[in-house]
Amino acid sequence: MSAKKLGIIGGGGHIGLIHAACLASLGYKVAAYDLDDRKIKNLQKALVPFYEPGLEELVKKGLEEERLRFTGNPEELSDAELVFICVGTPALPDGSADLRQVERAVEELARLAQGPVIAAIKSTVPVGTNRKLSQQLGKLGLSHKLTVIANPEFLAEGSGIDDFLKPSRIVVGGEDPQAMEKVVAVQSPSAAPVIKTSWENAELIKHASNALLATKISFINEVAAICEAFKGDIRIVSQGIGLDPRIGPHFLEAGLGFSGPCLGKDLRSFISQFGAVGEDALLLEAVFYINLKQLYSFVQKLEEHLGGLRGQKLGVLGLAFKPGTDDVRDSHSLPIIRHLLSRGAVVAAHDPLVGKSPQKDWLSRRLPSLQWAASPYEAAERKDALLILTACPEYRELDLERLKNSMANPLIFDGRNLFDSREMKELGFEYIGIGI
Image (cartoon, one colour):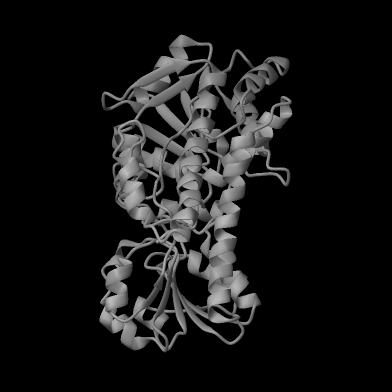
């Protein structure tokens, strides 16, 4: 299919842009469409709207080689044989997914298509969505023009390019074997395992994968609470658990819990899907509750330790929801900072990537009293306490003696357990982590 043109709907977003740039790097002609005209104009100049390692270079290369182009005109997708739909499915107030962007994208693509086209749905959608989309096309008399294939993505921010080029697995679901094979062929430069299945199974694989990751995080955070009660060390406990090959070490790091644009949203959506068919999602509801409790407990512990927040001068290290990205969507740092400010604290924050990205302006508009620090040491200077909220690798390499000397009170509340508590005590810090 290398001679054919591929399309992306939602090509300016995290998932869509990574797919567009990576597919172009594999030799395909890719047209990336997005509704956001400003974003498209910037991308045409190779100005990437968010940070993802290696992405800017791929976008520049794709533009220079004329394999990649960005457009705000959906008609430029009309001659594509395969289009990946990567639009958002934001949470509604009840936790269910808003599917309007996906539905509009599929219908518009079908109406524009000059010939038969495959729509590979990358967006995370509730179980049954792809079948309903296909049925709706039939009712509109458009099913002969467009074939719907479920093709969930498994890209993690910060490693999105590697995840695309070296996938852990490729999952496709549908009722047209030839269309499924074409979707697989485009994305499998390596010998990745491939699962070809039904629409529903593909949708369930995505949701169940994210739900299990969230469960592991909430599980280890609940164990962290009893570690604290018995003066244990959750890091050692996690290591011992993770060495069991049936369990593995991943997602067993105690901390503030899961955050970001995917796990929480997808978990709420999955829970709502259980309710829609009259089933209880008792375990998943507990996972969600434990995550909320973890954040509350951290803030409560800080407030009690300081004897209140009014007038306290606090430094915050980390604003993004995870290291290696400037994405602050549903980051735990934001509600924590908002709470600190509302209680009268003075807060200065540092983040190695957010501080250099458009996200800084976005945050400044929403948190106008938040002060910005140019370095971790500036964030800590003359502060009553320092909060570590994102496990950025730069923070692990801090000059701790310099950090201590810059603070009014060498108190660190570490929501990511970056340091050894005994060593910190020997250095003269009062160090409070999670489960240690």
